[in-house]
Image (tube, rainbow, N blue to C red):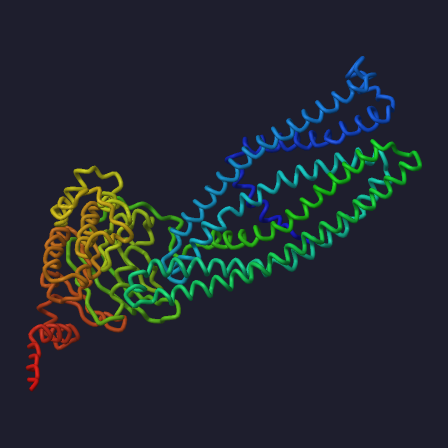
Length: 608
């Protein structure tokens, strides 16, 4: 039977190293608590044998008490005081042990959750595209305490084992037959634990997955709240959550019933053992092989022996839940990112901005030929427009430059060097991105702009806001730069959120700029304000601009036309308009749509 995977224990022990002083204190306190537990039954023996039945006092006790040993009242007082003192010591040790173990537990949980969070952020976007965020949140929050939970059982198991050994040895010295009879239950406990551990793991894993799915439903619904409200689907989402959670609750109840049956089996096995010990002990008293006090001490010890056995059985049973969590979390930690630094990667200090794609191809998982044989070059400071129908691969193309994804073939050069030769952090420091959807955090405006450069002063933040045409509207807000934006920046308009995103890019001051349709979702007046800010932002930077409105590309030095993942045309706007290609078709379609007269509204019928 292998109910405790040793590889998990060894791996978890590494998290104990930074807290070894606390761990050593826990070991000392555990040993002292075990020794104190050995003293618990002896005051009762003194009361029964020496006070009530007036048996002679042992030499050791007589030496300790002196003349008081001959007085029954003195012995009774001593027994009562000793009992209280032992209780005080044990409870004091329990408080200290609980304090130390709580510190260890919380610090290890913090360390492990932090490692999970950091590792999840470092995994590639391709991984996150395939995994629901709610499942990762569940793993980090609900399963992040698995290592500390496993480690916290070690002192419990250690104390139980020490107590078991000490009490069994004393019981054996007092009555070997009783001590040996008490061990008759051990094989049954061993079998029960093995059977439980073997048959419960799959059920626990299934229940954990269901509970994680319930949290994923909550996260998805809340993150899509605007869509839920817009379509009036609150009741639908409630039913979806209710049905999913009800399934999880039902399975959790079934697992709990199995755990309760296991507890019942352990209790009945130890109860049978206690009954055998009680019967044999009473028989030995009748034969004058034991005093009543001795029998009470032995029975107390045997009961105390069974308590550690029960604790060990329960703990090993409950550990299966921890192992399920550890298996999931270690699986996440062991997963290597698809995008990582090469062994000889070096840091890039400051790029000049020359970018070249050489025969680049890329495919998403389950979708082939997203990009095929893409080749072009952008000189430092040039503005590169990227156009094409929906699904042509425009956003994917610019996502390859900061290595959100890696190409399946070909290579991307930055200043003549393959981007794989640079560390990811230094490469991404060279690139600012303004997305179609302005993504903001729930903090203040200043904090969101400062995200572009964390050490920026307030003066630099305000200067970036002025450059982004954001300063004036910010100053009109009641709390100005300290205005809290709420979830995804809901406290301000879409155009204002986009200007804060542009200010963030200004503050980062990277030599390469990616603009992924930053004005596609704003009105014409707001678009003009944002484009004015973007014109300033693009000065001196190599810029890649995915454009929905082709009229915004009049100043582009080079336009790339994508269709079906292929680069079908490239050139200046004038060159492309002279050709009878895809760009000319897209341009004519947009111009025609703008010039198309609006249909006149027919006159209302006259009611007679």
